[in-house]
Length: 77
Image 1 (cartoon, rainbow, N blue to C red):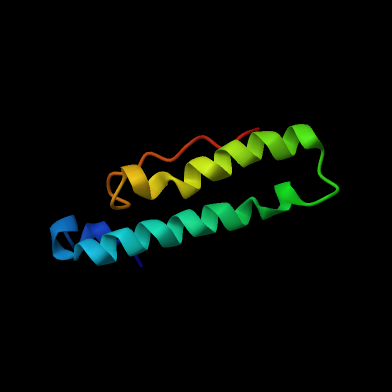
Image 2 (image 1 turned 90 degrees about the vertical axis):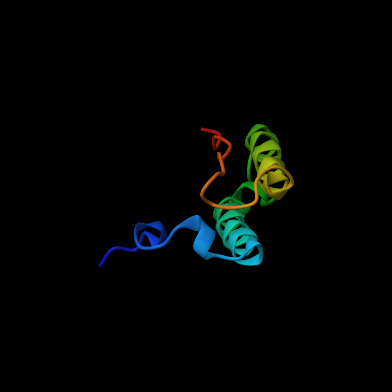
């Protein structure tokens, strides 16, 4: 089963609201995956690196309006 929604549909098949919603869902998942970095027992250097990354993720909808065009920030290592 092909899970790529773009394989059978054009981005033009979706409303602007659906495209921004899909972007927000993907963004929220990326933020949730890094929640551990803000726990009290995580070193400050790690927290700081991830704070900037997480802010870039929160701001992603100011620049992009769909998953098709988004360029994700690089997760810290």
